Amino acid sequence: MAPGTETPLLELEHVSVHFEGLRALDDVSFDVSLGEIVGLIGPNGAGKTTAFNVACGFVKPSQGHVHYPVPGSRICVPINSSAPAWREHCRRRTLSPLQRARERDGRRTPPAQRGFVASFLSLPNEVRSERGLRRDALAMLERLGIADMAARLPSAIPYGIAKKVSVARALMSGPTLLLLDEPASGLDEAELEDFARLIVELRSTMGVLLVEHDMEFVMPLVDRLVVLNFGHVIAHGTPADVRKDDAVIAAYLGVDE
Image (cartoon, rainbow, N blue to C red; front, side):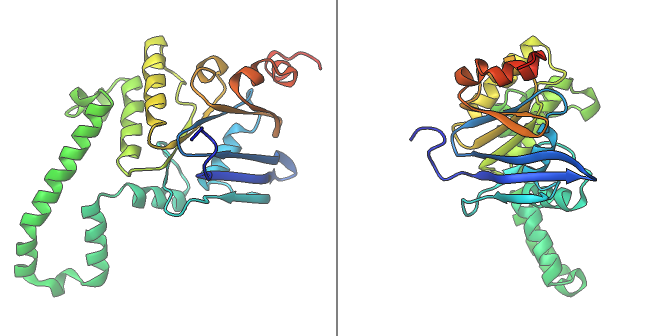
């Protein structure tokens, strides 16, 4: 099945966002399906971050709707957020099965009521689960080619590798939809090529929304592009079509239409 022909994993429908009289987004619509990479691009101030935040749930639309039409679809965003509700949502998504079980047990039966014997008898299962989680985590690092960094402190990990670690954490939850906000920023040429290969590989098992301002990085990767400028969608289509669109050229080059 061709990319974009399945039921979307994410759909923004006629979304507008107003901030104290400022219209940050105006009637924006786009979707992302399984097996495709959709690029959301535009010059600085175009509304990309606002659209990304709406898709994530950080910002509530003033008008329009955000849909996750596929039952059981899972979204993951490998970024840090100051929004408490979303931070808790992402924390729950990335909890290990063992941790989720512990939380359920903790709510259902207070520790004092479980008793020493029950707690002691559960230890072998917990040890096996922890070993399984460690094995899965190392396998994910191996998949991303960064297993040699497993024993390093976060402060000792190079910037480009740290971005991969962030994606690895997101992938541990088994998402069907991955949202990436300007992953190319701060990377050198070799790191850009490496990260681009990773994004293309991820398309085989999920949908990817890639928010960027660097057209040259995005163009070879995506199946479709949505171009924003001043909160409006000014172009939507294949990279080849968007590249020659007069409105896109004017937005990026500052040419009067």
